[in-house]
Each structure stands twice: as structure tokens, then as C-alpha cells.
Length: 382
Image (cartoon, rainbow, N blue to C red; front, side):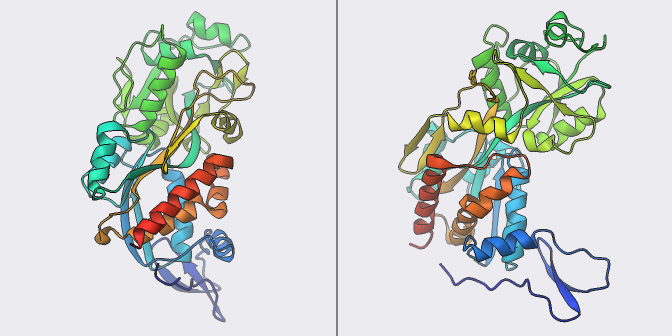
């Protein structure tokens, strides 16, 4: 790799350095401009040896579920390395994989691993070198609702499937009432929102419904929404905005999108061991018990959506980066791809996830991820 670039954190007398995501500027100390909040994390990561700066630019695209995590990593990495630009577009898993396969991007992000024909096409894109699924972000899919005056709501798999298949259409349906005896549910129509774009979040959510409520969910699983009714919204950001703005509504989003949402609240899911809220801690219980398949650095988790482990949130996920182990065109800056992934998989990178609603990876899974990233690092400098 090229030599590390010295980051520019230090202040000269009378000025502080303000590092934006894409630019560096000097601002007088008395000015109202605030110091970039990513500086402490960038300084800590550099001090720990978790960031190696590589100049240049890369473009990536994919899952909106990991967009907030990628944004956090990008802000810290670019603060430490102002000559680097990482442009990640949260276009959805389907479009992100297609962009990678067509060599438009340096890596792709997806909620579901790339397998079979798409994995073969990815290997072709990598010049015959293996393409790898590398899980980097742990998280959960939250079912978000907007009901005035109702602070807690519990649903089970059958009621969730009934709502999203449009078989349950009113909030005071007996199936919902039976699970929420301590609240008065309105006699109001349910406004249901789902993803309109090709989405790994949709694929995981529909997989969950098929696994846990097969008698209530009889629709295709995959990145395209196929159940009748409801309203489509593009990306997790638009789904949560739609729920937040629409009384008596419900939708599904990656957990980090609901943390600061106004009006939208998370549903607790009861699969027989009591209601469980979607939190990073509860999702980590599910991920920790999920079997992992690691074939020469290509890592895929098999998440048990039917779990009844106490405190385990069932709709837990990981998002994957689809990358070339070697053979990425030099114009796509494979060295910067490898350096950015190495930071994301480092202790400093994973530590950032817990503060924004994601689940840091740990244990044997994280060890395997770092070994996969080492393969990408080696391939980048061939």
C-alpha cells in the first residue's frame, strides 16, 4: 500500500481545523462554525493504528439498511484522510448488486448474500478471482408504527403477516387486541408501508414472515415486494418518513432509522418467550447463536428467525459487502477499498456501530471477517 497520509487535525494558533466529509478549511476560533464531530473518533482510530490513508476516490452503492453505518465510517475515515473520498449511494440491495456486477462501483452493499448465478457473475467481474460476501454490519429490522397515544405495541408473527398481506386491515382487529389487552386500540384503518425498490430489507423481512407464519404468508420471498395492498416507499428513509407522517400507519425499516424518528415507535415481537423490542443488544443475542458458513473468505450467516431464546430479537440481520478478492480494475482504486474495509472491520470501526443502533460484530465471526479483509488487502497490491 501507499504510505499513510498524515491527517490534519492539529490547530494552528488562533485557528482550528474544521474537517468536513469532503473538504478541509481553517476557521477562526471565534467563528460560529462548529468543529467536525468525527474528529475525536478519527484521532482515536489513527492512534490505535486502525486507519491507513489511501488517496483517491471510490464509488459504492447498495443496501439502505447499512447507510447510516457507512456514513459514520466514511465521515471518520475522510476526516482522518482528507485526500480520500468514499461515495456510497443507498440505492437498495438489488440496484447495488447490479451496479457492482456491471463494474460501475468498487464494491456493493446488500442485506442478502450474493449467491449462485450472481456470485458467478461477480467472480467474472473480478477477472476470474473469487468475489466475497463480507458481513460488516449487524442490525435488526424494526416494525415501526404510528398510533397516537399508544406508547407500546406487541405483535406476533401471524399478526404481522396478516397486516402486511392486507388480511388484517383495522387496528382493533381481535388478533391485535388479544396481544395488547392493556391499551385501547382505535377503530381505524391500517395504513401499511413497504419498500417500493429492490431491497434486501424486504427479502429478509419476507423470509422472516415465511419462516414464522407460513399459514398467514403465502407470497414470494425476495427483494421485490409481492403482497397485495399497502403503499410503496423507496428506501428505509422514505418508509420511516411515511410512517412518521401518517397516523395509524405501520412499516418495516432497519433499526437505526427509528432511533430518532418522530411519531414512529418500534413494535415488540412475541414469538412465545415474551415481547422483545428491537435493540442492538437483543439483536446480538440472535446473531451470536446463528451458524456461519465460511468458504475461503466468503462468509454467510444462517439466521434463525424462529428463535425463542429469551431476549432474542428475531428479525436480526447482517449486511454484506460484495467485493473482489483480487482483480479489481486499478481505476476503481482497490487499495482504498481494502483500507476502508479494514477500518470498518477494526475495533475502532465496529465500536462506532453500537452508538447508532447497529450491532458490532464479535467473536469468531469478526475474526473470520478480518481474515477475509486481509485477503482483499493482499489482492489489492498484486
